[in-house]
Length: 183
Image (cartoon, rainbow, N blue to C red):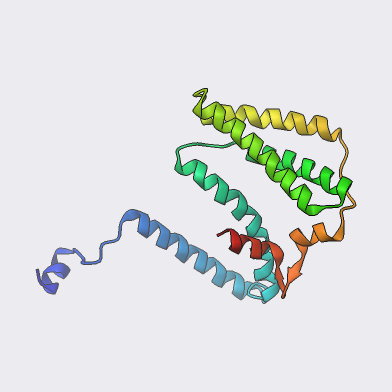
């Protein structure tokens, strides 16, 4: 078929699927939004703003990277936020008691692992739909966290611990390095 035939019949050699077109439309919309914001304010394309956005996005990246595996396998986990909350409370208690951010980190990871195994067993062995199992786990974890914390907050962490979430190395936030290392 000639090029003239392609033009006259309205067909193109470069046919994009609807999914690809939707992605391109979203990228164009994001680009237009960035252009509009950069025109509206001088602070949008500054290094500080970009690093701040990356630091905040890194936390969501950690959540999304774990949930991606669950969703790809056809599951759904509604208990993630409650799991993070309980794991953070246990980790903070250990850090406060021992002064060791490393031991606290392992405590938080172990707590999340135990909850994840419980969710997995309910779905795989007991054949409970993931929506129901993780929804129930969400409320169980909220209850445990509420009971464990008894309305108190944990504060006064060692400076080394604060560096993990809010520190900088070579002018770049440490959570951004962790996000890139995770990828």
